[in-house]
Length: 167
Image (cartoon, rainbow, N blue to C red; front, side, top):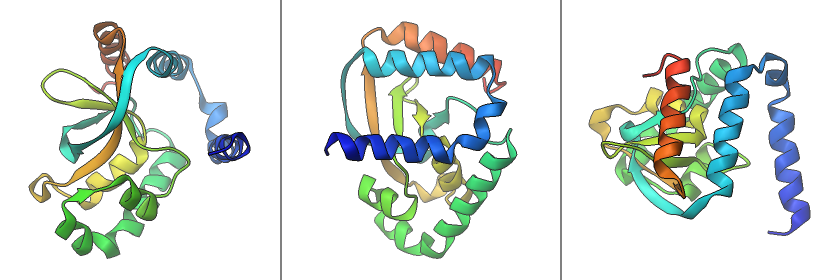
């Protein structure tokens, strides 16, 4: 991908988030710091399949009207394709881009107890969880980051999730 396409993708993502900028607070600043540390200080990152219900969000997606509406809209787009996707059981990054398009992949970091915290794609994950149950045993392909200072990142993520009442 060339730099012009990357800039266009970032611009489109920022533009899609414009209604959220006035609602940002200290928790969002803390999350941005965590995400930057993950992206700048990772040992490696690769795509892996993870069980949908082993994914926890870094922040809630049910606390802002626009985020709740976007999640609802995504779930509605997925519902007509549920039976087809259930047959696959494993949704590739290409499947996800087709049914839940976005400027970025869903991204996560490993946590304790074989769980992952998603720091990108939380609305898409929430929509998938509205459509599929734990019994469906759906797996999705995510970009998994291995932070250089894993325990420090995990501690910060747990603190942020607690600040949001997610722990």
